[in-house]
Image (cartoon, rainbow, N blue to C red; front, top):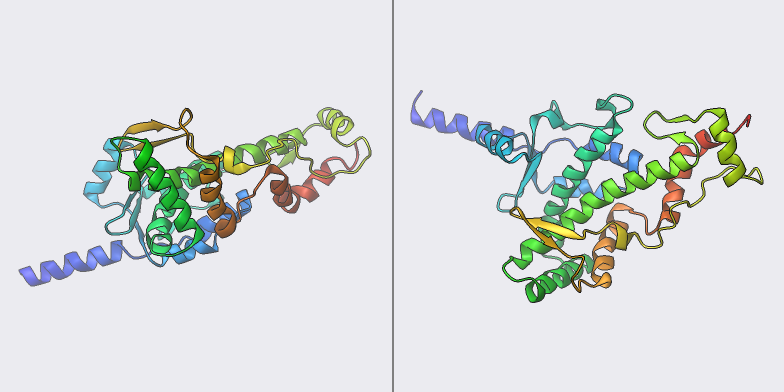
Length: 286
């Protein structure tokens, strides 16, 4: 094979490897499991590459243990091969019943990397509230944390917020369902004795509907990170003066653009839509 043909083959292979992957099943699954609205991810995906790792990237990911990486120079997200089914990212239906947690772990990683891309390709050069909020975070890191790249720190705070939203909402959804007598993993009712105790405690009037058992008034304080990691170095924010208003500014992006709930009371709207009929069936003969 001559040099021209070899270069053509390499370029063609690269283009094919870097073609946008289908995220629709992943997005639909996350909407169903968490009640988010992920249409914006389509806009992000159209401006970045999402692909499987090449040989060198596989070696690096195996060495580091990373499930996914994002390259801000090429706006490329790379996911391990096990997270693909053909040319699409896996969805909830690809996991066995009772193993939803595996999808949640993957989703937190993918959403984290997608938010790095959102930051770069949609937010950074805009005059949006999100851009202002991220600039405030960057300036805070520059003034208060020595020895770190403030821009990278803001990037990671944004990405870890995305991760915390996925894992945090999942935990609250599971807890609320369990408190109401529903097995989240199996999507089925508790036994009659357990349901009777719950009914006497939560529904003495017989009005069967979801009740806010979490009482989280501001998810912006709960689902934004208390620490971030930059190149393996942890930055603890718990004992700093990081403003709650900056947390609220970042979280507002996820409310406005991805339908994240403001509070646990808002989360009940999703639970009622997704599980309300099951809840009432559970107590039909109790």
